[in-house]
Length: 290
Image (cartoon, rainbow, N blue to C red; front, side, top):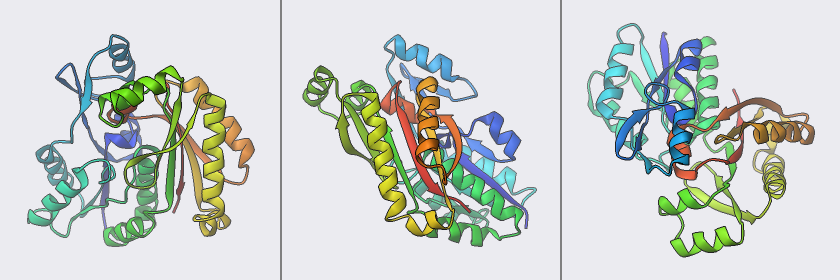
């Protein structure tokens, strides 16, 4: 069975990496001062952060369903099935909309599997890698889809946000709360447990944020992910927004703290995610692997 893997750019998989992996990436639109851009196609990370420094107004939208459907149709010309891994439906309606397209369009019924396993960024990327490995092992599209949905809860992400400005712009913080937080130099640690972005803790220093995130991960590994941890089936990855030097330091600290857990990659957060949290963010994800 010939299967093609596809995700959106919220996965953090660049167009270049996608070609190397043999997967397809649907770009998520990013708007800067109401002008539409696509990461890796018409907008680079460097250009995006330069625009933020100029205080540009940034926002995002969902991938165009018609564009995604066209990509599916083309992929099915040479393949038997498509597995599409969208950003978590807890963060975007993309998964729900595209699942309906796959269900209602006879071209895709039974051939396109929209695997909304509630992942984003580094955890979404791991899902794509898992699916590729399963396809290589001869698993069917249905078997891969079932595995992805079964293991959906086996993931955590913790994010330190360096500035409250973009959370305020996105309506996740009231102006008053943002003003107080900025005055007190608060760096919130947020979490994604498969669904929405929620508050986890409040700290004032980067070192405290990193310690808080590592303690949270340690708790996850020894409680709800214990069986997978004991079986050597959990991995770590780190993501950041224009904060590579700190991300590399954090990687070394994480590897020293958890020498028996596989560390996979450091990746910049996609611009569709960075638009909502701004520069200077640091994140760690732990996620099961195939």
